[in-house]
Image (cartoon, rainbow, N blue to C red; front, side, top):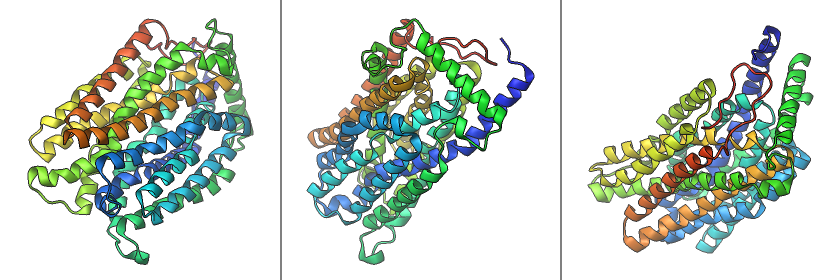
Length: 455
């Protein structure tokens, strides 16, 4: 059924205001979050690895132990956000992770590095699933892929902008008597603390309290979201009800967690080891790069990835999300990443890695529109956190296993083949789940353009 003209006008303006008012700010929080999380990848090949005498396995463990800390408090943190509200909880997370990140400036041993990376995960626990849940509670499902796509742009853009920024900061060796990599940690940490303070006053927990919406827009969003939640709660699937145990007992939540595992395994294998792989080009191909050269090369795959992410989510929103919007990129990424091993030059290698990055970032925001189709309330908070926990397990596994396999085999062939395997497994699981009707969305009573089931 097509909505009447006045209702359609209110819908357009309400979604536009949410897109302009909330999404950029939450995306900025994500930008700083991801930069702090991956700053260690820029530090390792630019002095930290030598100063702390790190092997590839030790660096991989230091990168990955962050995710163990995150896992410990992930689900409790998201449940706390559901109870206390996003404004308070996201602000608290940002301030505490900023403080822990700041302490990396003075790390001087492998043990201290492990401890701080673990504590950084504890401090950050719940931010990403909390941000996903927060944005999902502001727009109906048919707009969610677009909104999450805009939010997710922050992740590839973090490397596009963050890698040159990190390189520039590392170049200020001697500032305040610090090595360049310590200068970088100092200056990428402060924005998190400042944004946390601003978030306390800027964010709003629900549309009904948003004074920047007109009364008609507040009413439309509130009623539309309430009706959608009622449909999900009343759907005949036993896992749709807003109950914590139902979320943990849902087979499709666990399958989606396994799908997400594969994507995140690939994402963090690239995020943490790409700067090191690029640094290795110098010996492999007999060339020389400055710190800024390496930073710019690291950024190359992520700019096309941001464009692909934007247009891929737009296509999914306009034409209806289908299984191939998630499974297709998984296949492309799974096949392309091992091919990077057989390229004969830095240019060709980075070009193939760019294809992999585009595939990963195209699929992720579309993927995150799926869980909120059948979960609501406490079940949504728990289910989204559980799926993201699988991603954090993948983050630890990919970081440590990639480094360990590199030390054991002497190169990145086996580690990157393993990345390809997990991404192909994600594609298979997504197709299987869709074939069983496990990703379908209950059809709303009225809407302008129905969201297609993922089939």
